[in-house]
Length: 270
Image (cartoon, rainbow, N blue to C red; front, side, top):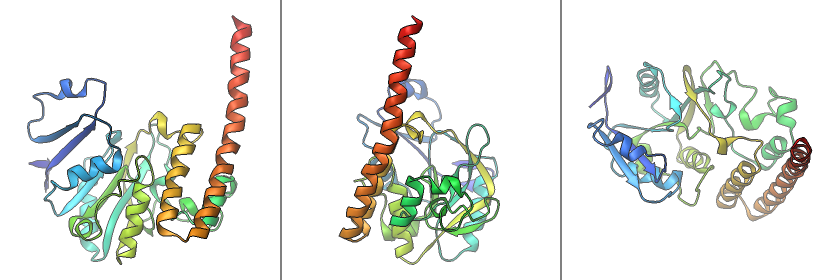
């Protein structure tokens, strides 16, 4: 089918057992779209792998449902990919619903020091530092193309031959971290990941992705722990796990205090 003016494509939509009536709403609509309706939430990685086995195109785009891409985004991205013989994957300039740049558009791998600086606020204090803001590659201009380590799972474009070689997502990652792991394996195979700034997409991040939420902290750093255990030495993993527990407690204490005060205030106001 024609996905846009100059591109022949196949489109798959996979639903992880949503309860908002999506299946009934889309019944009989968009006959050229391949819908897959899971009867349970199998997680981001496994759901994408289900579709990957069915894809036949030269390039594969993993795209979150809470995104809006521009009319020429795919044309520009594919043109860039075809100029790079060594490309493993491509991510793009992303903004939230208010037009604010999303720093996860370009990232480095979570080494111990990089993660430490992020966990304990150094990245926020020095947002453009090559050292302290390395997790989000804050020293790199958001409006220029760059070679990067990690692509964001909301938009990941890959040559199919690369995915055939390195494999799809690791399904031990249920939520978060699977994009970091795939990006790492692509680099280890000798390919380059690129951040492409010449097009912008909007990513409406959901409630589960709010960085101030304790549930997010647990899931996100838990996923980073899986990544470190898989790819780094045992000693690094132990140190990383230690920092994860500290980060969770540092987030938990103010959130708990805030919750108590809100309950007291609401109780008095009644």
